Amino acid sequence: MQKSCTGTEISEDDTGETKKTISKETSEDGTGQTNKTIPAETATLREGREMFFYYNIIIAIVYLIVLVSLAYKVHTRTSTASDNTIAAREMRPSVMALSYGAGFLGTTAVIGFGGAAALFGCSLLWLSFFTILVGIFIAFVFFGRRTRRMGMALNAHTFPEILGERYQSRFIQGFAGMVVFVFIPIYAAAILIGVARFIEVFLHIPYVVALGTFSFFLVLYVILGGFKAVLYTDAFQGVVMFVLMVIFCYLTYHILGGIIPAHQALTDIAPLVPEHLVREGHLGWTAGLRIGSPLWWTAWSSLIYGVGIGILAQPQLVERFLRSPSDRDLNRSVLVGGIFLLAMIGVPLTVGPLTNSIFMERFGYIAIVMAEGNMDKIIPLYIDTVMPWWFGIVFLMGILTASLAALSSQLHVGGASFGRDFYGKAMGLHGAMEGFTTKLGITMTIIATILWGLVLPPSVIVRATAFFFGLCAASFLPLYFFGLYWKGVTKAGGIASMVGGIVVSFIWMIFFHDQESTIIGLCRVLFGASNLVADFPPHSWIWQLQYVDPVIVALPLSCVLCLLVSSLTRKMPRGHLNLCFKYISK
Image (cartoon, rainbow, N blue to C red; front, side, top):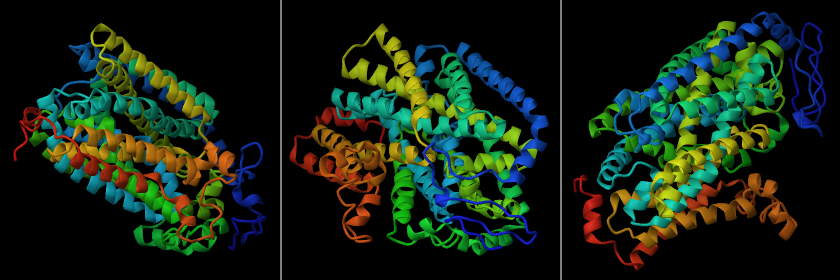
């Protein structure tokens, strides 16, 4: 059957049944909804599953209540306030690895990046390689051990705190704390949107209702739990999600008749790639992306490079290193974490493209059309319409656990960044009020996360994730890395690197990177164009800059600033350096 996804109509299949008519290349109309009707086959399948509708809702609510109860049980056993907000250095290697991996991407890996892979194709599998190489091997081997030892010497418990203590700078700790506090809700919203989209599709309820209901249980979980509860819930959900990902991968290949037939079927439908995606560099789901094209720059600079490198400077993950009891536990975590991330990242990036073949075979449409142009709905719709009914409810329970744990971790990090790092350290206001401001920070982070979840547009999960990961890399990675390895880096160098990284990032977003500059609109107001390079000859190297992620520019400049300013400014006191490297062998 020949099919066009770009224009106006779809031809009849061999049975003479007209599939559908699509307009505007699956674009959205004035109401924000894509101009298409859900296939009759999908509606029929959903009607057949309506008998499970109320059972699924009841199971989901009961499961959420159980999770909140378990979090409260752990909370009642915490001995100190710090255990509740920043936890302590007492994690087993398995808990460390699973907590680290589970907190890495949460539902954004399965829902967001799985949906992105359905659009971009198998090229995104490189992200799986980067997350294991950089996020596990390099992070644990080259960053984890030194971070743990330096944090122990400086008595640091949060990421901004170890930066501030390393450079003897209240400004660095306070500025880093505010960056985390202000922008981590955007990343947390990506996870919140992921679980809300799945609830919306699987339980067939409005998105706002799904988001509001889950947010209610999230608030209870955060209030009654604490960070120690997060760590062990992370580990529990890690085991659950690992098993689910293995089953998910097996069932997908089983439906398509095996590994080779599955990828051959995906190769065969390459002519069905929408024309606007072909113009932007899409060569087919197994053929990759044309080098230098808009899609290639988006995939490689924002998703693969930005997320793959940005993981090294994630505050909620660095703090796992600070809580590890020994170097041996860090080393033991590498194997478990590598296998776990292979499943959590590799499986969604593998299954995502294959959903196009299965949707075509069963319904006559590629994945992005089935999801009405919203990448965030592709995996939920695939599970709801293709997977066995029992897998959907088990997956729902796993995704609820994953989301609660990952979100609670980020909310506590946001609260600690505001109360401990900004208010307590940078403002110099220690004492009883620090605990109150930390809880206030958590509350404000929750509110901001929910608001972002309501206002962010469709297909936003991977964009929000890449934004936060890239911003952290440009702002924190150079002074974090040099602080661990180079005694010659100075306080002024660290400040220049951090401030320069974030300033360059936002300049690039406002005036060059099309995704943000179009939304912000300041460049159009000042210069009459969506960005400063949009009017250059198409496909020229200058014109391509509008698709280059800010991290590509900001991170190297941040490194240069750190090295240059450090070489020109006064070195830090020898006594302090000896303290910082007290437990780090030469």
